[in-house]
Every structure is written in C-alpha cells, then in structure tokens.
Image 1 (cartoon, rainbow, N blue to C red):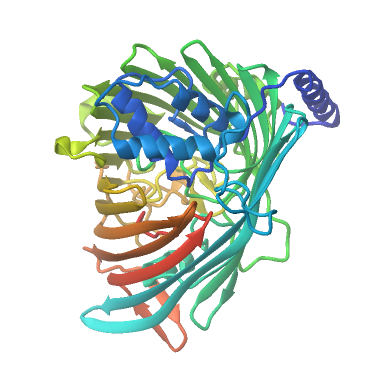
Image 2 (image 1 turned 30 degrees about the vertical axis):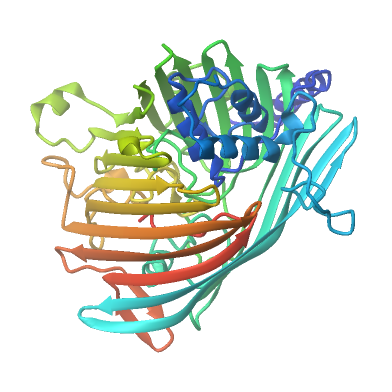
Length: 586
C-alpha cells in the first residue's frame, strides 16, 4: 500500500498526538556525537566494571548524554578496577554533559572567563542556563596539512600540500526540560590523498566519504562541501521512550565497522523511537535515503528511497548481551510503504504482504564480558539463505551473508589504559546488492550503508589505544583485506551498486570471487589535548593496493592521469570541537 493524501494525514495526525503527549513529560535528552572519543572510554569503563549496564546501550549509537551521566555516577567504586586516568576521564565526561547531573550544574567552572561572558564553563564557549532554558554554543574549527608521496608502478610522485579545513558551529540545549535540540554545521574544504581521489572520481561512487553534495576544483583536485545535522528530541514515556526527529547518522554494532548500519555514508533525514525498559533496549529507525545517481546530471531533483530498521537488545546476564536486527530498503523510489510503520512486526512478513522486492536484511549480535578485561563481540547478517545450497558447498550465488568476530582487551598485559582490539569481517559476494534494479541496494548517496568495502571480502583490522597521561592519546591502526574485483561490466558480486540479476555466475561463488585485490593500511596517530576539546594531531599513514587483474582505480589531476597503488602521507593538524579527519577505512 503506497502513500496517499489520506495516509499522510493519518501519519501527521499520529505524530501530532505523540508530540502533544511528549509535552507533558520532562525526560527529553541530547546525544553524544558519533565522532566523540568518549565512546571508547565508556566501552572501556563498562567492561572494567564487569557487567553490562541497564542504563547504556553502546551497541546503538548515538547514545543519550543523560544516560551517559547516569552510568558514570552509578559505577561501583571498586578499588583497583579503574586507573587514576580513568577517574580523570570520568570527571571530564560528567562535566561535558553537566546539565544532566541531579542538580543540573555539573559542568566545571572556568578559572577565568573571557570578558566575563565566554567560557564561563571549561568546555563551552557560550553557556546559558535558567529554570526553563538551557543552551550551549561552541565553535567548530579544524585544519590539517598533509605531505604525500604516491608510488605509481615504481615511480614516486610528490604532491604537496594536501589540506583539510573545517569551520562552523554546534549548539545543543533544551526548552522547559521538555524538548531537546541539537545542531551541527560546518563548511569544509579538502584536498585528500591519492587513493581517496580514486574513490571519489570512480563510478558509481562519485562521493566524498561521509558527505553528500560537493563542489570540485580540478586544479588539485579539491572538494568543497557542507556537513549539517540536527534534531529535536521528545519524551513519549518518561525515562522509557523517546522520539527523535532530525538529520544525521547512526551506528549499530560494537566493532570498528558494522555489517548492519555504519556512519560511513552521508547524513540522512530520520525519525527514531528509542524504548528502554528493564534489560531491554529497542530502537525503531525510519530513514530517507538517496539512491545512486550520476553527478553529470545535476540540474534535476534527486529521487529518494526509504528504509526502516529495528534493533532489539537484551542483557541476558550481567556479562552477556544479545541483539536482533532487521532492515528493509524500499525498492520503489519516492514511495514510503505505510505498513512498515508498525514498530514491532517482522519486515519479511510485511514484504510478503506487499508482494514487493524490497531489500531485506536480518542480523544477530552478541557481546560478552570476561574477567573484567576482555570483551568479545560479533555480528551475523543474512540477506538470502537456502539451506540446501548452503550446506552443499556448491557456492550458490544467493547464499548472501556476512560475519563479524571481534575482541577487545582493556588494560592489556596489566598496562593501565592500554587497550587492544582485533576484528575480522567477511561478507559474501552479492550481499547488499538489489535484485531487480539498483534502487533497493544497501547504499545512500553513492556510499555503502554498512562496511565501506561493500561485499566479497575478508578484512582484518587491529587497533591499539594508549593514554599514558591524561592529555595524551596514542593510536595505532592496521588493516589488511582481500577482495574480489569486478572488471568492466562483469558482476562477480563485489560492487554493491550493480544489480543482483546481472550476476556473472550463479554457481561456484566463493568468498573472494573474480580477480583478487589486496589492500593494506597502517596509521600511527598522536593527539595531545591543549585545553578542553582542543587537540593537536600528528601522524602518518601508509596504504598499498594491488590487483591480480592489474586493475588499479585511476585518479586524475591537472595534466596527467595515473593509477595509484601505494600512498604514504604525514599530517599535522589542530582542531577545536571537531573530529579528526582520517582516511584509514578502505
């Protein structure tokens, strides 16, 4: 059943009723941005506590600032469990979200405010709080300079300088303790490394990672784009159910990457319902996405597609959390299926009822704490499955699934604040592809909704985080992956933007299908916090890429076109209230 005038009136009426109900409650909240470094610290503290919190659900992000403060203030003060640096981090996190302490005044005062007006609080440029209104406003500033060497089949070409610049603002607050709001806006200019140019210039990507519309200058090349997100949050049932409406990103999973929903693509308009009762967390997500398009056609309005997602999480024991995920991406452009608004029904049932070819995906998650130092996690996704083909080992192409296995080791080898993480991801070819056309594929704005590699790969990733003193953060990240390569019009199942009906082969499909490509990347980063939320970043990355078919993504710059297979770059940057721009994910 497609949307109609009367259906839209019913939806609008239902939303209006929900809003009116919410105005009588005082349990709205705002959320930690996905890029916030505090997510790692919260994950660490929860594991070191030895039990999963019924307050937090770090598998579904962003997380509520209110629940972060509740979690931190209720941590058991067990001697020897948390380091001195942990205590500093906890105090700092509570101050950053101080409006959610019991007295509402948990933000740390500055020793000396600017002109007795700005930075009255250590974290916030403008801080206003009355009985009925709260507002924080902060500038967002960042600059990063890079020096690059690219090896082109034995020839080294220097290309300097590479630059990244971001400037804008963010604000958050509440009105009468009934409506929470947040806005983030930045203007960005970027001249990225060679392999990122490969990605942006390639088809069908034509996308700056994480962004939507962009302008390009062929001189460097360089890219100019805006990043804008924001939302309103209302309480439907005090302390148990919230509704959030806005534009932004989400992440479902406990790993470095997610096979279900990641924050790699552009911001999307969404409506989110979050329900937390007892040991259960339940999230409904309704999203408006942009199907793949050709940038050469920019004078016409881009179509939309829609998706709905459910995630149910349950703390089965103090040390074991399990979850169930399902999603549907609609196959019809500019049409929302009203039947998918049901917040509890299985999407496969709705698909069968509608008789349409929507893209269905289900997933199973687990997370376990062991001995207060170890955390094991994973995901298993299923797109299509035929048991007879699966167990016959015949490599049938419509056995489409993915697997993630990961482990985290906190205070590794008894070294305080040394945290290690290892992760394996593998996804069968043709997973995430749409069956009849490319509308329903698992993408948004020419970018994957899940792992940035797409399908048909095996990926190993390791990360070491070390905080030797309170203001210094060291990170080492390494990745190795093997993936099949789609050449020309051949569809071996690795390019999720192609149609599943155009598969090159239906039998004998292996995890690495078609010509094999190999990628590696290693990054070393040092960040020092000069003052609250102001960081200096220093680091270096090395990336290689090779293909058994001799196929390298080409990138062009003024005067020449090259095929890059190795890139090394070093960078130095400074940022205020901004995440570090990194390129170590593909």
